[in-house]
Length: 147
Length: 326
Image (tube, rainbow over all chains, first blue to last red; front, side, top):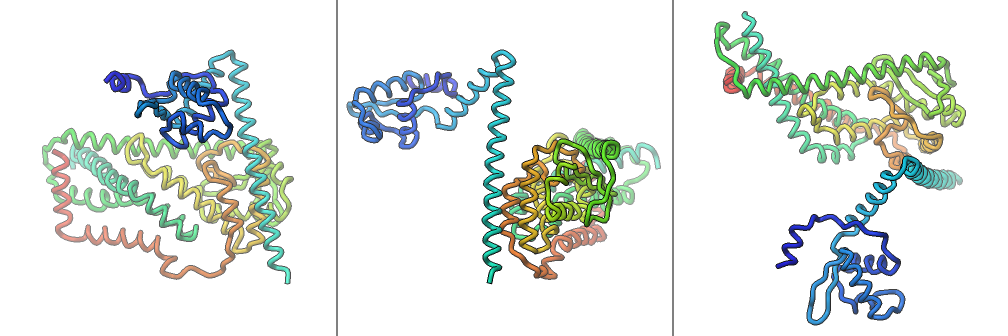
């Protein structure tokens, strides 16, 4: 009942968070991919061998940070992501940008300049890709014309 | 004929225009995705005609209905000495009709003004010259941006920056100029003006943006097709020219009545891909297929005119006006 009341009164936006650690990110990725899992499932699917208690502590920390929901099934907790990956990434990006822009003016300008550079680099990559396609097509046509 | 009689006619005309246009516009907005999908199956030249015809249909048909049916029925059947008052619904619809027209006319005038200022700036800072293979004069600009634009609604002029002329080979430049000539031949700037003049569904909601974007996209494709003229080598040359111009830097957004080689909102990647997978074809489309968009328009207009010519139609229209005015 309390959980239901909490769920309807709490605004449905991801909470403000410091960046996640490496293991926390891996665990979140796993849960986003697989959905609801218990500690045992997570331990089984991690690419490196980790102690059961380490994973249990990580899941508990993520639950306390408000990133996971959990419910009891038999004697174990089942954890599931509270937010979709998209919601979480959106919130993180928004907070990051807002934090920069709220700072002194040079910080905001620096961020915008970095974003423009990044977009420019992506444009360059796209143009490189298009040029490569044109070269390939030209070669193809040339070979087709050769007797 | 008294002043109040004419004011009532004006009010009814605006109100009925707004209501007919609203119904047709809403129907077209719903049908737009299907129409765009259908146009993708056509060649760009025909798709351009179909999409433009669809975009202008609500305005054209509404004007035809008002000028050819509702206004004549009022003039013929409404007694001159009537003392009827205009109801709130009719007044509100008329006000909305005036608003949609005022906004579209303002938008078109502003775009025409910006386009004119742009041409004047080109004439002031540029130099008129002739490029090899081009019979019409070209305005050569010493602009840091890579400009290739066609400015002017009735008499279009090609504006190109020296940066672009120096960056492209003679063959690539010829392909780019052919592309712009295609826009000039098909009077695309004039068509843009017509699209701007055609009112939106509601005062601050045009409602045809998907159709207009699709039209802008196929307009570029049609100009590309004209420029390559069914030749795969030319097609590669134009694709190379597009990428080379894109590498020269960003182009400032041109005024609405100026056609740019690489307009905003038209995906360069899709355009280049299309040019690379161009299938040379000299086959003419079937006569029936060629006439389809124009034929559909003529058929529609003829049906409306035939309907108007029916003796009972004017009376029925007058009854509708009577219901609207209350």
